[in-house]
Length: 310
Image (cartoon, rainbow, N blue to C red; front, side):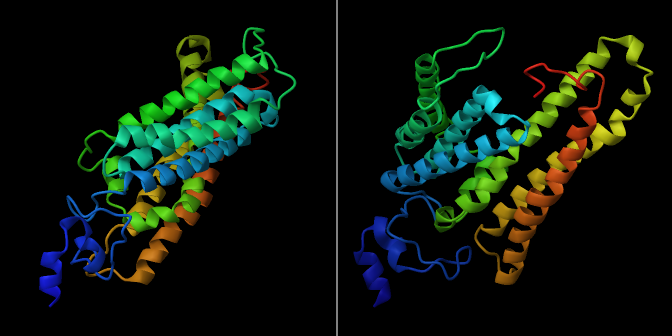
């Protein structure tokens, strides 16, 4: 009887009434998911746009939080905060485009519009004073808002294009696509923690690049004692922190992929908590902060008031 019912139903909705096979045991797909092309064919474009819009806002807020953590006076770096917001919105749009079944570029472009509107209304038009950005250049609030509004929308289009690209085997995009679609409706909570760590990791890379470049062009400092300690107390913990961050995110994503036969629910939950809470939220920030604090004691950074040092 069930076989006859399956035959009579259109292929598009077959996945709604059947249970997943060996890779998705115990999982019935919802009408939001399409059955064409396998169990991870994608979301309906409308729901993919809603999901992408929410992740755009989540990732943008997380990036802004991460940039504010880098400085004792975060309000003085409103340009950096805005850049973090824009790239976070683009990342959320790329995710919505990746998960969409079709019209991927359109989904990515539309996903970023609510986030751009919120940013424009709450973060920029309310400012009454615009500090100099660099080289004593002070833009007007209107020009600054319109410029970054355009960047926000452009990042949505770029994110849609990236999400529509063919996935690289073994790449990060494939890891995202292999996650069960139902999990993306709650993964925005840990994703906030993952994305908020990215500005810290990027700032460490920037400081390491600045200090190493400064050392390379000043031979008189090659044998200075503080530089000799850079490898042990700056480079090593920072690189370990980035590695731990990547490992924690990868472990968390693998925990929400279709279950294999020898996996248990408790084990998957334990791995997810270990990846997100222990590795991403505890170990990685400790290592990165250790590396950054050491680099800030280096001659080129210590006591510097340059806008690009924070």
